[in-house]
Image (cartoon, rainbow, N blue to C red):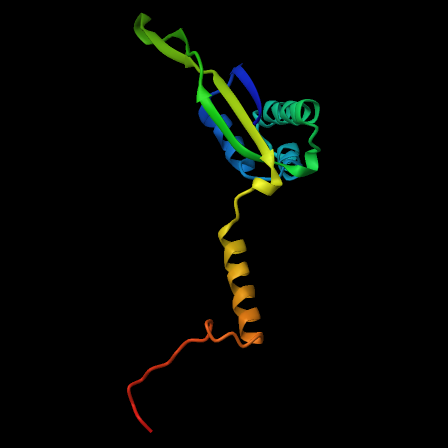
Length: 148
């Protein structure tokens, strides 16, 4: 399992998950393009983390980046720094400064799950090929109950 982890990234997990969900399940090269053009602050650290995971795959498992996809990416909440801001009438207003832990897991494209459209396409191709070969098991048997 090819993994990389970024701990205590100083941004809210809710904001980082927006970027993480963009690249989850994508091939590595596609994910790099998405992260390059994303207009969110979290895209740079996630792109760096992806580069680190690719380097781990190359050095530890001798895999090329063309054969990898993002199997899983999770963003968990880290330590919350609690601060106070002065407000009206001398009151103290709480501020929560949130941190994120980002975990990325890569796998090879051969293990990539199929999408619904790919499954439908394969079923259609099988159906068409069965019709061409006149396979009787694929033909629908019509029984109306009427005799001629």
